[in-house]
Image (cartoon, rainbow, N blue to C red; front, side, top):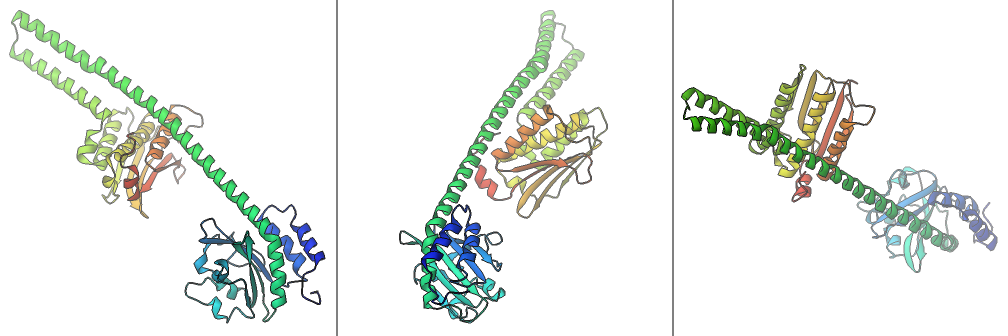
Length: 417
């Protein structure tokens, strides 16, 4: 029952202090307070709105009737859209209305007042939450009746707000500190992941250099040495005939072909001259041709993906990811079919590589190492890479997504991978 004077007394103040002691979140505080102030300020709905650091957004926490203001459903609202924006910006020191449904102060262009009307709230009383004279939010009481609150209730509401303000401010600072700490930890983890990934890529590049050196030594250098010796032998004997010249010509052509393969593996020239789709098709054809098993491939590219508009270093990174995925399928998946799709949807470029093979290995190994390299390459160009089973449950589904336009700005001058 509401006390006879309507004013809050010392016993009620102490009761409020005991109720909020030890509460560790906003909703718990207002729920604890709600019961203790019903005798002083009856309400069907009680909410607290807190202003963010740059004083542009409020987050609301409520008890009683549930509305769209609650932070769990409508986390943030611009102050300019709040029906009590004049209070939050300190233009007025309280708002008291007998019926918000008809009060013009709650009706203006862009006002987010619908939760008031939807909940059938009429009487409303709003007072500011202040710390060191600065408004940090508001405390609001509402009922579904008309004409519930008086000027005496404004004074009581201010006392309650003064009790709660430092408590809410401390909780808000704690939440912001936790958020900042979480963001810092997230950045450190991301940085460490990229550092480890970059080390892996450095190792991979060194291995690639060694492989190129071995190929040049074992194939090209050996072929050229053999050709040189044959030429020297024939020149010394002066017995160089037309048929022998033909054989030497074929040896040189073979050597050149091997050298082109080595160079193309080091820098995909087909990507530079013919575009991403043609480069992937050539990669598929070459990989399938080198596979001893019968492997069918399909490339789906309607030319609308926008991949060709990306910077060259981004294209090379995407090509290397697709190359690794195709190599994994050819070498490890025991698949009969591999599909590559290049497309664009919802402003995103999507590259999908799928097969009908044995799926991802359950234990770590080279294939997982290759997957780690692919994830690192994707991170370095701000792309997202996901690997899962195909929708039909057979084989592997690898998908790369990145913004069709923003990625070009993000990767200009970026790291070559």
